[in-house]
Length: 214
Image 1 (cartoon, rainbow, N blue to C red):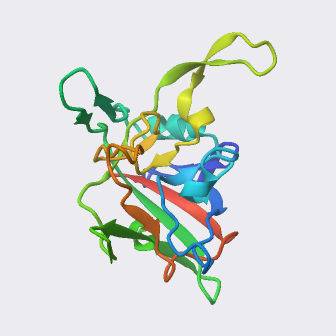
Image 2 (cartoon, rainbow, N blue to C red):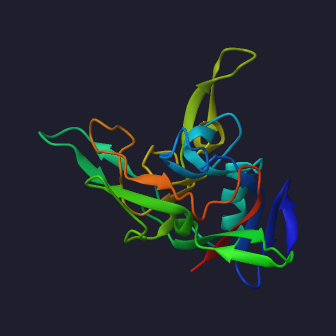
């Protein structure tokens, strides 16, 4: 495992990319028992209120590291509004697995399926179940944003600014996306995912995000 970008490490032989983060959401506050999620891993000052983990690794650097594994990105999901009904278009790209690694009580590393930290709310019932689907290397997109200093429009890697490094719902800017298109607009689709208090570690717990090519 060698560092190829700040905070991003690569193992070419085992086709693994990893980067460090920490639990950013408080799933143990009795005043807010249902903490809804739209992102698995985000960047600072973006979507901390709806993400499990925050990382200072840049989404574009994670993208570049996945390219170094030989993966070719697909495209993020989106919604087609051109017809009478909104049509979801699922994200595409090569399959990857995403795991969270934490230190166990004895200090030994423990790997977690990130879905084990998530519950599904459906029909008012809270289910501890993993939805059907997989993570894919969608590759985000390039977008024009105003430069904070000059004010001029510049082309940027969208997930760097949007914070959607590992997504759940479909904002259309995810580097790594869940394979089912799900709208973050509650008027279109009701939110389904909440942090599972029984398994989500305390806020501030250090996490290594492990991404493996499939």
